[in-house]
Length: 60
Image 1 (cartoon, rainbow, N blue to C red):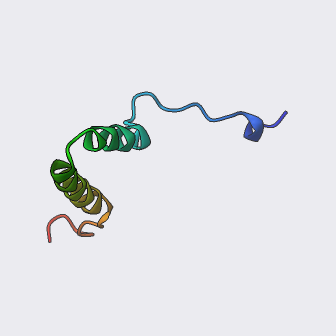
Image 2 (image 1 turned 180 degrees about the horizontal axis):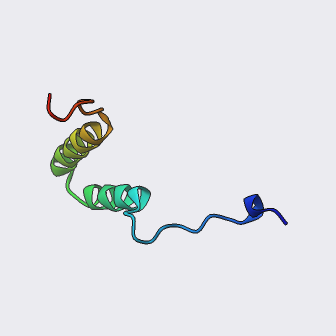
């Protein structure tokens, strides 16, 4: 049997982004409507910051 058939085991030492996102969404959804809007805006800003590429040269 080839090694490709072995399912990957999750690395438990690494943060699980999907679970983090789901947890954040659950917390936001439990808030009153006005606070939900602020929570979604903050989550959007955080995700955008994570996804934006940083400078290629850290000394720049």
